[in-house]
Image (cartoon, rainbow, N blue to C red; front, side, top):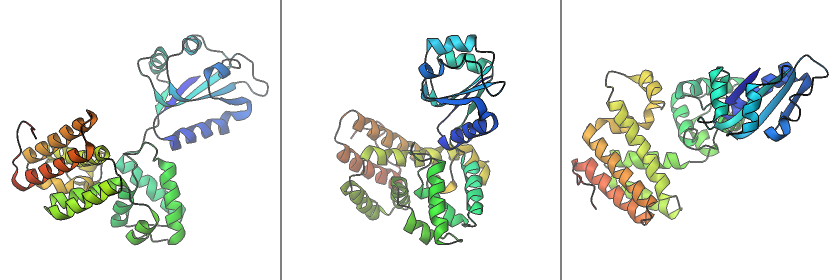
Length: 309
C-alpha cells in the first residue's frame, strides 16, 4: 500500500499519522527524507507481515528515486507519505493520484470548524453563545494566518475553559489577544457606517503600532470581495450563504447594503493600492490615500474610473 496525506491542517495530518502508528505500528518507522526511508523499504519486517514506513516531508517535490519506487514498490512494505504541500505537476503526485491513494487534510470550512469547536468546548465542560463565538473567531486568524491551526484554537479553548464554563465575550477579550483581522474588521465597520473620523483615528493608531499597510489593505480587500460575491447570489441566505462563501456573516454583511458598483470600486481601489505598494511606492502614503478614496466612494459612489491619483 502507498498513500499520500497532505494539506495545511497539521492537526489532522498528525491525527492520521497517529492512527496508522497505533493500528500498524509493530514494524513501523518514521523518516524525514526519502534518502533515509529508501534504505529500509526493501528490508523484510521482523515482527509482523508488513513493514510500515512513514515519510514526513514539508513539501512533496520531484524525486526520481521515489518515482521509481512508486512504480515498483516493495511487496511487504506499506508507505505512508505526509506532506504540508505537494507539487501537483510532478510524476510522484500523478502516480499516487492515478491510484486514488491520497487524502487532503486542509483547514476546516466555517461550518465544520464551528462543529469542531463545539465538540472541544463540550470536552472541557464549557460553552459559548453565538455572540461569544463570533468574537472568538474574530480573534483567531484561522483562515488568514498559515501558522494558526486547530492546535492553536484548542490551546485557546483550554485557557478559556479554565476561567469559566460559560465563556463570555468579556473573558475572550481578556484572554485572547486582538488580531490584525479584528482591528481591520473594526476599521471596515467605521468606514461602512460612514464614521470617517473614527476610521482615520484607528488607521493612525495602526500605523503607529507598525502594522504593515499591505497586510491591512489585504484584510480589507477580503471583506469587500466576500460582500461582492454574496451580492451575486441574493437568493441564497443565512447558513447556506456562509457555507458557499466559507465565511461567517459578520465578515461580509455590513458591506452588502451598498450597491454592487460601489463594492466593485472599493475592491478595485484596494487592489490598485496593494499593487502600488508591491511596486515599491511608499506604503503608508498609499494606505492613507486609499482610505480617503474609500471614504469618498462609500459616501458618494464617485471615484475616478481610471483609478488615477
